[in-house]
Amino acid sequence: MDTPEERPLMDTEPSHAYVQQTRDAYAAFVRGDIAAVLTNHADDIEWIIPGPPDLPFAGVIQGKHALQDWIGRYVQTLDFQRFEPYAFIGEGDTVVILIHVVARMRHNGQEVVSEEAHVDTYREGKVVRFQVFFDTAAYVDAFRG
Image (cartoon, rainbow, N blue to C red):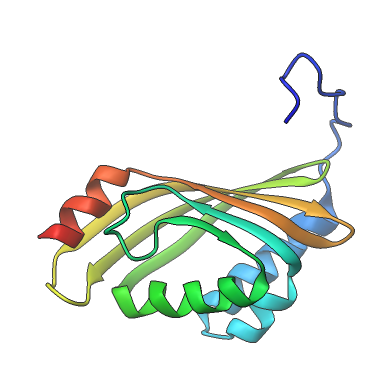
């Protein structure tokens, strides 16, 4: 990957089409339409979630089929009380989503409250890279109970 000094400056005009596409994908997730979520992602998607190996949804997921399996593990692990994206910020091929999450671990009832930043990187109209930034310790503590 290029260092910040090597990257060309992006056009400062937000990519409104990608922002809307991202809004639509998050709305689909909230209503449980996983097929619609998956159509937004490239076949070779790289999906990055921080955390230790015992956190069932942590790791690097490669490819759309693996992503579909990951989504299944994610919703089997967490019972969402609130999943609220509140800001979508786009520039060039990148959309940053700020999101408020309140969830309970299904296996032990422990609650996690998280302010998160999700970063989607687009190529040719599809998300090719997704990365989450959140309080990993809060998720681990809740999962381990």
